[in-house]
Image (cartoon, rainbow, N blue to C red; front, side, top):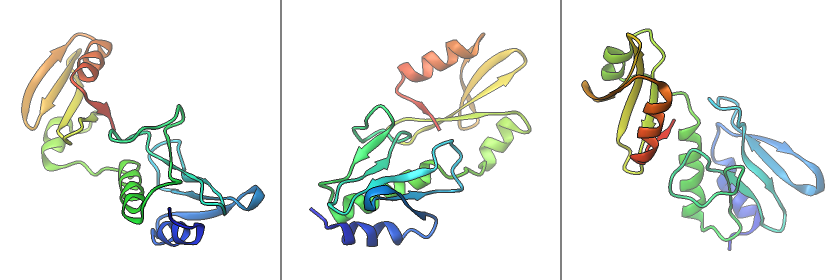
Length: 158
């Protein structure tokens, strides 16, 4: 198990995180550029080594109902990897050329699965269309139908 100081050093190596001291010697780290309401990436890191990292947008971690992962027993590599993934998941995504061609000025949603396959959901001409690259993969009459299909196929909204 890493010590508090070792965990703190790893977390502080991410310049995009801002330290916020809280009660009882605990520390939070916030990601101010988050695309989500979730700003606390690291929550209640305690001098005894316990703490939590937000992983609510990630697929390969066991999270609590708030999307947090307990990092008490994480190795240095595991903690670094989790922080990198969490920050990346909450960072603004620039549209790729393919997305720009499909979505244009519309509001498209990005959906990914555990293998990082990307599908784009777009409302076009009173239909909800799902694209894989430039190819139309499926079309639905309502958003709810499209969302249900994507979830059944193992995709999560980014």
